[in-house]
Length: 125
Image 1: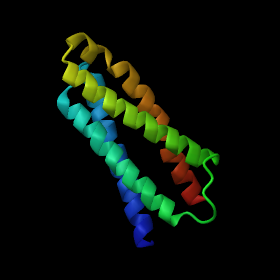
Image 2: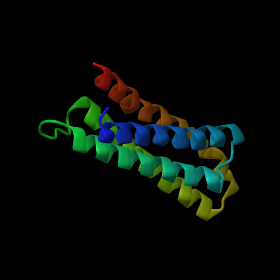
Image 3: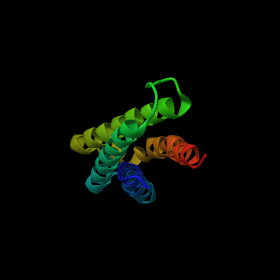
Image 4: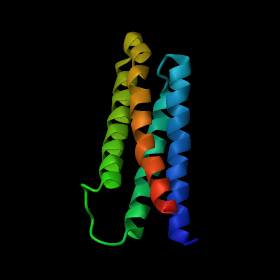
């Protein structure tokens, strides 16, 4: 296995691990905590790094409208918005907002799984 391919797969999988822990821990707690937001940001950072490594491996011209690329970009922006909103909610300090935050988390996480598993499928085929 190529070193860059191994690094990119590892980074993307670390994104899955950190983001999933943050999302599910927040979902179970029904209350947004600071460490949840930190895990969102760490997951996003690993995802951006892994996506960049995958971009370096890509052959041919960059096409944003290719389904895997498009869903991946949407997922990255959703993750960014999610992490930024979590940070805002925590800084705002409103307990009611912290309790209601988890409704959005699972939707972003499920959408993120589309390019994650799509990339695995593409790599195997």
